[in-house]
Length: 283
Image 1 (cartoon, rainbow, N blue to C red):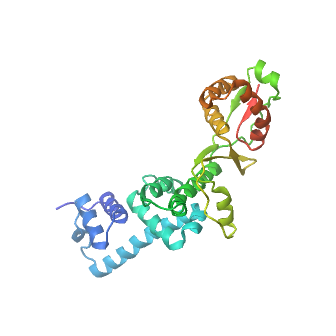
Image 2 (cartoon, rainbow, N blue to C red):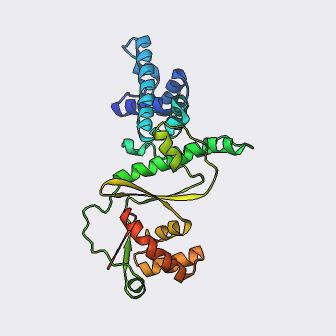
Image 3 (cartoon, rainbow, N blue to C red):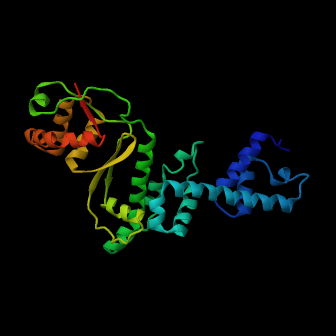
């Protein structure tokens, strides 16, 4: 007979909580996984009371995690509706149970789950948007959550470079992006839609259009800036390459923009990017 230890009991309980099925199926799977029969766990206890409490605890565990997802994805819940959101959240929790102790990591894979479970078929443009937008909205809300916790430029005292055509060409300037920067490529222009959802205003379904958004922080406040494709590519390069001259060279090749054209665009755009906390250029 298998010995019932605290570790095995904890493993039995965790398995029972996160697997699919009704209570009987959960108990059977937990027993098979741990080699501990439910009879051993109920020795000396009133079995009907044991299973009733177990059922309440299992349901409560999932619902508490659903509430955590609601707090991370409030705009998504507003778009999907409370009941539909809860159904997808419960399915996500039992399909991809978190392997990390922090609740911050709970929703990290929610967008990918929504994308992989969306219905496939020949739909009208409005229906296609309806099925695609949950994953898009969740990507934005997850990025915003990550920005709020990652390190920004706050407290740094670097001397910012004066950005003019001569300095960019002649000096070895350094470019730096903050760890909190998140670059998101979207199939729909959903930022205006999300703003309306947050205000509980009426909205029209957006038309599919590739767009790019950068999220960062400036003085601890969330910063959001729409990007053109070349700006998106430039920031991606800046995340890997510290020398501004190299960033310009690589971006010119990636985008096909003439280097002189790219330099002219950067002279106008870099101050705005700096103000929004997307990067900084130093000597």
